[in-house]
Image (cartoon, rainbow, N blue to C red; front, side, top):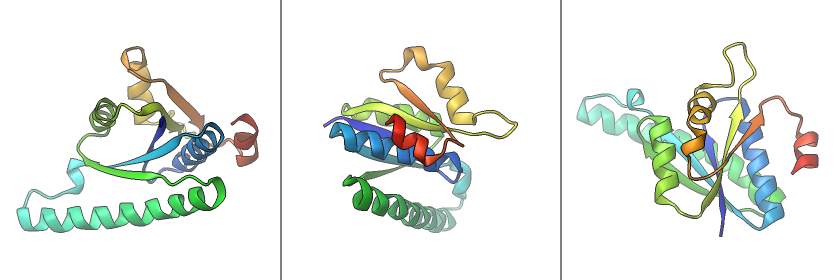
Length: 151
């Protein structure tokens, strides 16, 4: 089954990317894989502290994931898969795409503040010509009604 890969983070635009991925997956009998990345700076260099920080980060991610997963299951009949990786976001996204051949589309939300669309959109779109799959960039402020219309 083809999957839409969407990145889970704490940005506002993440919500629209999740919505888009779930709506498209529902209408095309695809799946949704949600990728959360624990950045190196989130984990201390001290072994005992690092393990505790890693466990806390995983708990936060799983709680955040469950909010989206419940909506996807209840409203779109999609049972998303959670993948948690550690490292630099762009590297980990590319590695996940390489490792899971069923991923067919990467879905990213574009930020709307004055700093541009966000670091993931910026970095990945620069290298989009060499990616093995297409990227769908969802505007962060697109109303959910419009998302429903276009999916």
